[in-house]
Length: 307
Image (cartoon, rainbow, N blue to C red):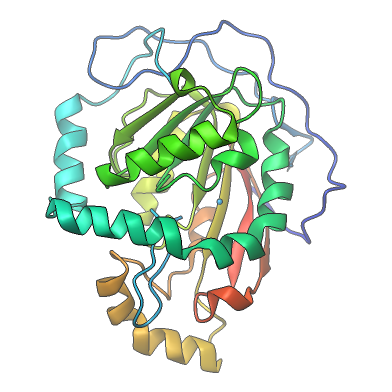
């Protein structure tokens, strides 16, 4: 695995296009299926370099947290649908409807300052997908703030996974606003630890502010790799623990238990960059920045990993 820590720049050379293939699409795991063809290994990566970002948070006292491809030809799946349901119930036990609706509503209205500040980073990151990915999985799609960056390309199909079913109406509205036909968008209630898609079925996986709140980071990363085609890419934006010994890291350590309670499991002190780097991707590139709107939810890590 080659690891690059670089300043992110729009001058990064493109890594090639998705090779032509059949127009088969990923399928959800509730049917018998056949195998599908794989993507060429150099679809996004070349010469060992990849050019080839999310559950938001509630700051110490305010509720804020972040947490969507259409099926056609079936692709063989490893797990029966019962396994996905069991994992959903284990990781995200049923909550009252009013709570899920309140949480989704707060998320939909409280993230604007963060989204405004990180927009430039996201635009540059997601530009790497333009013309290169037709089947896109977004884990923790939440209310769909990322769709405007990548979903308008012709022929793009987006499959959005989120454990909170009340996010769906907001995500569908965001898809329409982004110019994505609803026939090319599917929302499925599931968790990152058990993604209801077949092996090697998508060109790209998007996840922003997700790994802070999943129950099992390593299992989620393993699932991301499983559903990616060879040469596919994982685009991520995550907040990570501040440097050891800093005042910010001390504050994060103190507030972490409260953050997990208020922000649906969000952790302030996870070393997410290290987890991604050690998860077996062939190549990882990332940069870090701090955002004034994120306060103690800093620094922010954003980058691309190649399968």
